[in-house]
Image (cartoon, rainbow, N blue to C red; front, top):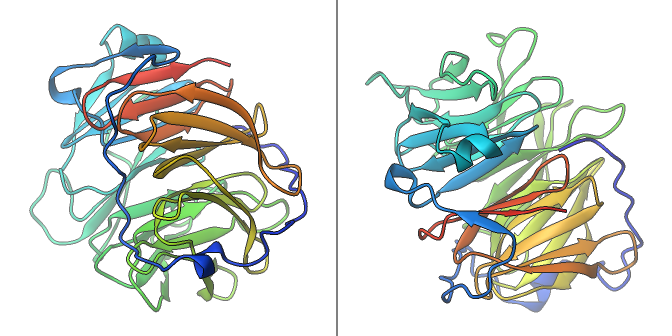
Length: 338
Protein backbone atom coordinates (compact mmCIF):
# COMPACT_ATOMS: atom_id res chain seq x y z
CA UNK A 1 0.00 0.00 0.00
CA UNK A 2 1.09 3.56 -0.57
CA UNK A 3 0.86 6.10 2.21
CA UNK A 4 -1.85 8.73 1.93
CA UNK A 5 -3.97 10.57 4.42
CA UNK A 6 -7.11 8.77 5.49
CA UNK A 7 -9.65 11.45 6.31
CA UNK A 8 -12.28 10.21 8.73
CA UNK A 9 -15.64 11.76 9.28
CA UNK A 10 -17.18 12.35 12.67
CA UNK A 11 -18.23 9.33 14.67
CA UNK A 12 -21.94 9.90 14.25
CA UNK A 13 -23.85 7.29 16.23
CA UNK A 14 -20.86 4.97 16.53
CA UNK A 15 -19.23 6.38 19.65
CA UNK A 16 -19.84 3.33 21.84
CA UNK A 17 -18.19 -0.03 21.41
CA UNK A 18 -20.70 -2.00 19.32
CA UNK A 19 -19.80 -5.05 21.36
CA UNK A 20 -22.03 -3.60 24.07
CA UNK A 21 -25.04 -4.40 21.90
CA UNK A 22 -23.98 -8.00 21.28
CA UNK A 23 -22.86 -10.69 23.67
CA UNK A 24 -19.16 -11.34 23.07
CA UNK A 25 -18.45 -14.87 21.98
CA UNK A 26 -14.80 -14.57 20.94
CA UNK A 27 -12.65 -17.12 19.10
CA UNK A 28 -14.33 -16.14 15.84
CA UNK A 29 -14.02 -18.28 12.73
CA UNK A 30 -14.98 -17.47 9.18
CA UNK A 31 -18.32 -18.99 8.14
CA UNK A 32 -18.11 -21.53 5.34
CA UNK A 33 -19.30 -20.03 2.09
CA UNK A 34 -22.09 -21.17 -0.19
CA UNK A 35 -21.04 -22.11 -3.71
CA UNK A 36 -19.75 -19.08 -5.60
CA UNK A 37 -21.88 -17.73 -8.45
CA UNK A 38 -21.17 -15.07 -11.09
CA UNK A 39 -17.74 -14.32 -9.68
CA UNK A 40 -16.37 -10.95 -10.80
CA UNK A 41 -12.93 -10.16 -12.19
CA UNK A 42 -10.26 -12.67 -13.17
CA UNK A 43 -9.90 -15.96 -11.32
CA UNK A 44 -7.32 -18.68 -11.76
CA UNK A 45 -6.31 -21.70 -9.72
CA UNK A 46 -2.74 -22.66 -8.89
CA UNK A 47 -3.49 -26.33 -8.25
CA UNK A 48 -1.18 -28.85 -6.64
CA UNK A 49 0.34 -27.76 -3.34
CA UNK A 50 -1.35 -24.35 -3.68
CA UNK A 51 -4.86 -25.61 -4.39
CA UNK A 52 -6.07 -23.96 -1.17
CA UNK A 53 -4.69 -20.69 0.18
CA UNK A 54 -4.24 -20.04 3.92
CA UNK A 55 -2.87 -16.51 3.66
CA UNK A 56 -2.05 -13.73 1.23
CA UNK A 57 -0.12 -10.44 1.28
CA UNK A 58 0.97 -7.90 -1.32
CA UNK A 59 3.96 -5.56 -1.40
CA UNK A 60 4.43 -3.35 -4.44
CA UNK A 61 3.70 -5.52 -7.46
CA UNK A 62 4.64 -8.73 -5.66
CA UNK A 63 2.20 -11.19 -4.12
CA UNK A 64 2.86 -13.81 -1.46
CA UNK A 65 0.51 -16.74 -0.86
CA UNK A 66 0.77 -19.35 1.84
CA UNK A 67 -0.61 -22.89 1.69
CA UNK A 68 0.28 -25.16 4.58
CA UNK A 69 4.04 -25.63 4.53
CA UNK A 70 4.62 -23.76 1.27
CA UNK A 71 5.07 -20.07 0.51
CA UNK A 72 4.72 -18.79 -3.05
CA UNK A 73 6.03 -15.35 -4.09
CA UNK A 74 5.86 -13.61 -7.44
CA UNK A 75 4.11 -11.02 -9.58
CA UNK A 76 0.59 -11.40 -10.91
CA UNK A 77 1.98 -12.49 -14.26
CA UNK A 78 4.25 -15.06 -12.63
CA UNK A 79 1.32 -16.54 -10.72
CA UNK A 80 -0.77 -16.65 -13.89
CA UNK A 81 2.09 -18.47 -15.66
CA UNK A 82 2.72 -20.65 -12.57
CA UNK A 83 6.32 -19.43 -12.63
CA UNK A 84 6.57 -18.04 -9.10
CA UNK A 85 9.14 -18.79 -6.39
CA UNK A 86 8.24 -21.54 -3.90
CA UNK A 87 9.79 -21.66 -0.42
CA UNK A 88 9.40 -24.48 2.09
CA UNK A 89 8.18 -23.33 5.50
CA UNK A 90 6.79 -25.05 8.60
CA UNK A 91 3.06 -25.72 8.76
CA UNK A 92 2.85 -24.24 12.26
CA UNK A 93 4.16 -20.84 11.13
CA UNK A 94 1.81 -17.96 11.87
CA UNK A 95 -0.03 -15.46 9.72
CA UNK A 96 1.68 -13.98 6.67
CA UNK A 97 1.82 -10.18 6.47
CA UNK A 98 3.37 -7.36 4.44
CA UNK A 99 5.78 -5.01 6.18
CA UNK A 100 7.37 -1.78 5.01
CA UNK A 101 9.95 -3.53 2.82
CA UNK A 102 9.51 -7.26 3.35
CA UNK A 103 6.96 -10.02 3.65
CA UNK A 104 6.85 -11.09 7.30
CA UNK A 105 6.36 -14.63 8.58
CA UNK A 106 6.62 -15.58 12.26
CA UNK A 107 7.35 -19.21 13.14
CA UNK A 108 7.59 -21.07 16.48
CA UNK A 109 10.97 -22.45 15.43
CA UNK A 110 13.34 -22.25 12.50
CA UNK A 111 12.10 -24.01 9.40
CA UNK A 112 15.34 -25.97 8.94
CA UNK A 113 16.11 -26.66 12.61
CA UNK A 114 14.81 -28.60 15.59
CA UNK A 115 16.30 -26.15 18.09
CA UNK A 116 13.99 -24.32 20.48
CA UNK A 117 13.15 -20.67 19.89
CA UNK A 118 11.10 -18.68 17.44
CA UNK A 119 12.07 -16.98 14.21
CA UNK A 120 10.66 -14.05 12.27
CA UNK A 121 11.51 -14.26 8.58
CA UNK A 122 11.82 -11.01 6.62
CA UNK A 123 11.47 -11.99 2.98
CA UNK A 124 12.55 -9.68 0.17
CA UNK A 125 9.75 -9.75 -2.45
CA UNK A 126 12.15 -9.37 -5.38
CA UNK A 127 14.66 -11.97 -4.17
CA UNK A 128 12.82 -14.23 -1.72
CA UNK A 129 14.88 -16.31 0.73
CA UNK A 130 14.69 -17.23 4.42
CA UNK A 131 18.08 -15.70 5.24
CA UNK A 132 17.01 -12.45 6.93
CA UNK A 133 15.77 -13.42 10.40
CA UNK A 134 15.03 -12.20 13.91
CA UNK A 135 15.26 -14.83 16.66
CA UNK A 136 14.35 -15.16 20.34
CA UNK A 137 13.19 -17.76 22.86
CA UNK A 138 9.51 -17.03 22.20
CA UNK A 139 7.65 -19.42 19.87
CA UNK A 140 6.62 -16.63 17.51
CA UNK A 141 3.31 -16.84 15.65
CA UNK A 142 2.70 -13.19 14.72
CA UNK A 143 4.91 -10.26 13.76
CA UNK A 144 4.73 -6.87 12.09
CA UNK A 145 7.40 -4.71 10.45
CA UNK A 146 7.06 -0.95 10.95
CA UNK A 147 7.86 1.78 8.43
CA UNK A 148 11.29 2.28 10.05
CA UNK A 149 12.12 -1.42 9.86
CA UNK A 150 11.53 -2.31 13.51
CA UNK A 151 10.09 -5.81 13.95
CA UNK A 152 7.51 -6.41 16.69
CA UNK A 153 6.76 -10.07 17.41
CA UNK A 154 4.81 -12.28 19.81
CA UNK A 155 3.69 -15.86 20.40
CA UNK A 156 0.15 -17.15 20.79
CA UNK A 157 1.14 -19.04 23.95
CA UNK A 158 2.78 -16.04 25.63
CA UNK A 159 1.92 -12.55 26.85
CA UNK A 160 5.34 -11.11 25.99
CA UNK A 161 5.92 -8.83 23.01
CA UNK A 162 9.46 -8.40 21.73
CA UNK A 163 10.71 -5.54 19.56
CA UNK A 164 13.79 -5.88 17.35
CA UNK A 165 15.05 -2.33 16.55
CA UNK A 166 15.97 -1.78 12.91
CA UNK A 167 19.36 -0.25 13.72
CA UNK A 168 20.42 -3.03 16.11
CA UNK A 169 18.19 -6.13 16.08
CA UNK A 170 20.16 -7.62 18.97
CA UNK A 171 19.12 -4.77 21.32
CA UNK A 172 15.65 -6.19 21.87
CA UNK A 173 13.07 -4.72 24.21
CA UNK A 174 10.19 -6.53 25.87
CA UNK A 175 6.67 -5.58 26.95
CA UNK A 176 4.50 -7.82 29.13
CA UNK A 177 0.81 -7.91 28.28
CA UNK A 178 -2.17 -8.98 30.37
CA UNK A 179 -3.30 -11.62 27.85
CA UNK A 180 -1.85 -13.64 25.01
CA UNK A 181 -1.45 -12.27 21.50
CA UNK A 182 -3.13 -13.55 18.33
CA UNK A 183 -2.26 -10.77 15.88
CA UNK A 184 0.02 -7.73 15.79
CA UNK A 185 -0.73 -4.94 13.31
CA UNK A 186 1.12 -1.67 12.68
CA UNK A 187 0.37 1.40 10.60
CA UNK A 188 1.89 4.85 10.09
CA UNK A 189 1.25 8.12 11.93
CA UNK A 190 3.15 11.23 10.80
CA UNK A 191 5.93 12.43 13.14
CA UNK A 192 5.30 9.59 15.62
CA UNK A 193 6.39 6.03 16.18
CA UNK A 194 4.23 3.72 14.10
CA UNK A 195 1.18 2.72 16.17
CA UNK A 196 0.92 -1.00 16.91
CA UNK A 197 -2.21 -2.79 18.12
CA UNK A 198 -2.57 -6.19 19.74
CA UNK A 199 -5.48 -8.50 18.91
CA UNK A 200 -6.79 -11.22 21.21
CA UNK A 201 -9.49 -13.29 19.50
CA UNK A 202 -10.50 -15.36 22.53
CA UNK A 203 -11.60 -12.25 24.42
CA UNK A 204 -12.27 -10.31 21.16
CA UNK A 205 -10.16 -7.29 22.15
CA UNK A 206 -7.97 -4.68 20.48
CA UNK A 207 -5.25 -3.11 22.60
CA UNK A 208 -2.67 -0.40 22.08
CA UNK A 209 1.06 -0.86 22.60
CA UNK A 210 2.86 2.10 24.18
CA UNK A 211 6.21 1.74 22.45
CA UNK A 212 7.65 4.95 23.88
CA UNK A 213 6.99 4.00 27.52
CA UNK A 214 7.47 0.27 26.86
CA UNK A 215 4.17 -0.79 28.36
CA UNK A 216 0.77 -2.11 27.34
CA UNK A 217 -1.86 0.45 26.43
CA UNK A 218 -5.61 0.71 26.78
CA UNK A 219 -7.85 -2.09 25.60
CA UNK A 220 -11.30 -2.17 24.02
CA UNK A 221 -13.70 -4.95 23.15
CA UNK A 222 -13.78 -5.47 19.40
CA UNK A 223 -17.40 -6.37 18.76
CA UNK A 224 -18.83 -9.82 19.40
CA UNK A 225 -16.00 -11.77 17.79
CA UNK A 226 -13.12 -10.13 15.95
CA UNK A 227 -11.77 -11.81 12.82
CA UNK A 228 -8.82 -10.08 11.20
CA UNK A 229 -7.49 -6.55 11.58
CA UNK A 230 -5.68 -4.57 8.89
CA UNK A 231 -3.82 -1.25 8.83
CA UNK A 232 -5.26 1.87 7.29
CA UNK A 233 -3.31 5.12 7.02
CA UNK A 234 -2.28 7.59 9.69
CA UNK A 235 -3.16 5.71 12.85
CA UNK A 236 -6.26 3.94 11.51
CA UNK A 237 -7.04 0.23 11.86
CA UNK A 238 -9.86 -1.74 10.23
CA UNK A 239 -11.39 -4.70 12.07
CA UNK A 240 -13.89 -7.32 10.94
CA UNK A 241 -16.39 -8.18 13.67
CA UNK A 242 -17.08 -11.64 12.29
CA UNK A 243 -19.62 -12.68 14.90
CA UNK A 244 -21.38 -9.30 14.97
CA UNK A 245 -21.40 -8.74 11.18
CA UNK A 246 -19.79 -5.32 11.45
CA UNK A 247 -16.90 -3.24 10.16
CA UNK A 248 -15.13 -1.52 13.05
CA UNK A 249 -12.81 1.44 12.46
CA UNK A 250 -10.32 2.27 15.20
CA UNK A 251 -7.81 5.07 15.63
CA UNK A 252 -4.61 4.69 17.61
CA UNK A 253 -3.11 8.08 18.40
CA UNK A 254 -2.60 8.48 22.15
CA UNK A 255 -5.02 5.63 22.94
CA UNK A 256 -7.14 3.16 20.98
CA UNK A 257 -10.56 4.59 20.14
CA UNK A 258 -13.51 3.18 18.23
CA UNK A 259 -14.21 5.79 15.57
CA UNK A 260 -16.87 4.23 13.35
CA UNK A 261 -18.87 1.04 12.98
CA UNK A 262 -21.50 -0.22 10.60
CA UNK A 263 -23.37 -3.42 9.69
CA UNK A 264 -21.91 -5.38 6.76
CA UNK A 265 -22.65 -8.61 4.90
CA UNK A 266 -22.78 -11.85 6.88
CA UNK A 267 -19.57 -13.22 8.41
CA UNK A 268 -16.98 -10.59 7.46
CA UNK A 269 -13.47 -11.95 7.87
CA UNK A 270 -10.85 -10.20 5.75
CA UNK A 271 -10.43 -6.42 5.58
CA UNK A 272 -8.02 -4.14 3.71
CA UNK A 273 -7.41 -0.45 3.08
CA UNK A 274 -7.21 0.90 -0.49
CA UNK A 275 -5.04 4.03 -0.52
CA UNK A 276 -5.60 4.65 -4.23
CA UNK A 277 -9.38 4.98 -3.86
CA UNK A 278 -9.54 5.81 -0.14
CA UNK A 279 -11.87 2.88 0.52
CA UNK A 280 -12.11 0.26 3.24
CA UNK A 281 -12.78 -3.19 1.77
CA UNK A 282 -14.61 -5.98 3.59
CA UNK A 283 -14.82 -9.59 2.36
CA UNK A 284 -17.71 -11.60 3.82
CA UNK A 285 -17.60 -15.38 3.47
CA UNK A 286 -21.26 -15.79 4.39
CA UNK A 287 -22.35 -14.04 1.19
CA UNK A 288 -19.30 -14.35 -1.11
CA UNK A 289 -19.14 -10.57 -1.35
CA UNK A 290 -16.53 -7.82 -1.29
CA UNK A 291 -17.73 -4.31 -0.49
CA UNK A 292 -15.81 -1.03 -0.49
CA UNK A 293 -16.78 1.73 1.96
CA UNK A 294 -16.03 5.44 2.04
CA UNK A 295 -15.05 6.41 5.59
CA UNK A 296 -14.85 10.18 5.08
CA UNK A 297 -18.41 10.86 6.26
CA UNK A 298 -20.03 10.36 9.65
CA UNK A 299 -21.04 6.82 8.72
CA UNK A 300 -19.27 4.47 6.28
CA UNK A 301 -20.98 4.55 2.87
CA UNK A 302 -21.00 1.65 0.42
CA UNK A 303 -19.29 2.62 -2.86
CA UNK A 304 -18.52 -0.60 -4.73
CA UNK A 305 -19.58 -4.24 -4.54
CA UNK A 306 -18.24 -7.45 -6.11
CA UNK A 307 -19.05 -11.17 -6.06
CA UNK A 308 -16.12 -13.24 -4.83
CA UNK A 309 -14.78 -16.75 -4.85
CA UNK A 310 -16.04 -18.99 -2.05
CA UNK A 311 -14.27 -18.85 1.31
CA UNK A 312 -12.32 -15.69 0.48
CA UNK A 313 -10.54 -15.49 3.82
CA UNK A 314 -7.53 -13.60 2.44
CA UNK A 315 -7.64 -10.09 0.98
CA UNK A 316 -5.06 -7.48 -0.01
CA UNK A 317 -5.04 -4.37 -2.18
CA UNK A 318 -2.17 -3.52 -4.54
CA UNK A 319 -0.82 0.01 -4.94
CA UNK A 320 -2.81 0.48 -8.17
CA UNK A 321 -6.08 -0.41 -6.43
CA UNK A 322 -6.34 -4.00 -7.69
CA UNK A 323 -8.05 -6.18 -5.10
CA UNK A 324 -6.62 -9.67 -4.62
CA UNK A 325 -8.56 -12.39 -2.81
CA UNK A 326 -7.74 -16.02 -2.17
CA UNK A 327 -10.01 -18.96 -1.45
CA UNK A 328 -9.34 -21.26 1.49
CA UNK A 329 -11.36 -24.05 -0.15
CA UNK A 330 -9.89 -24.33 -3.63
CA UNK A 331 -11.70 -21.68 -5.68
CA UNK A 332 -8.40 -20.00 -6.56
CA UNK A 333 -7.05 -16.45 -6.60
CA UNK A 334 -9.28 -13.59 -7.71
CA UNK A 335 -8.13 -10.25 -9.17
CA UNK A 336 -10.45 -7.26 -9.29
CA UNK A 337 -8.93 -4.40 -11.25
CA UNK A 338 -9.92 -0.82 -10.51
